[in-house]
Image 1 (cartoon, rainbow, N blue to C red):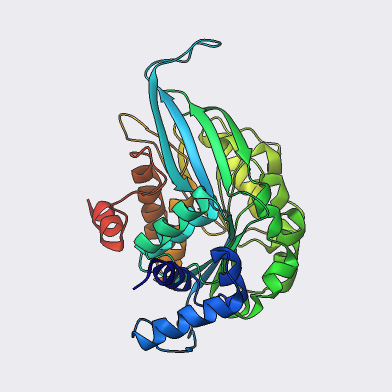
Image 2: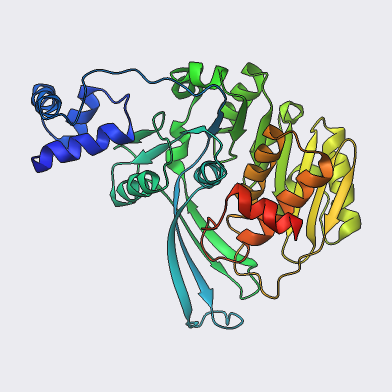
Length: 357
């Protein structure tokens, strides 16, 4: 196979719905040139001609962001205005992407709807998606804006000192962009939304879908506020509660007060997590609290996505509140044991075995 044919084949694997015009733009050749390469791929048996994508009977749609995370962990407490020794990591992330990967690891069919740039970070995401069996059929690679990047520094305690977020590409996920993917959203069992989306897009999702809508929060949590009663489930960390409820979470009582306030707004399920405060899961029926039992928390960047995926897993399995709370706490705490966004060991058996223990 020629290198150009290999490249085109990889793009088709990543997005079976990609058009010849889009392939031509990515490859920097004419559409007729793309057609010739596709014809060769069919003749050689690498493609079987035009096919159709059949959605699984039950799946989750995840609408959210892709980000290349670059972060530093100092060896000791940070000294301001000085060089601090430590370790610097780079990892593919993004709240939507992290949730979709966790769902895939939990054997939950899902489609990830997002945008990413035609740059090195975008290519890294595509490679990572292929390795992790992440279905990005309905995502789109664009050349006008770079892939989102997030640069942050944590204390040794895993508390965030500061972050710089260049996520302007997510503004491309407009209602018009999603209308082109309306069938896949209409037929989803549940829809996960990411506050990286423009507020207009979040409001459009609230207004147009009756399925349970679930969200994990970040520092853009306030984008979820207008029409928040449409949310079925919200996962948030203690630092973000004030954006919605004006309650600062510092202990069990304030976590309970925050959850009560969110439920009064119409949300059915709330999960709050914090490396110091612990884990708090509440529904309209019951509430459960678990302290953090780890000797050291390494990072909290992927914790909410893992918790949200565990909630989806438990709901599809029709588990009761207590079992669900234990699974969600397990997913969240286990993800605190890695510096990266996704726990390699995440799986249904991993969660269930840890709950049994």
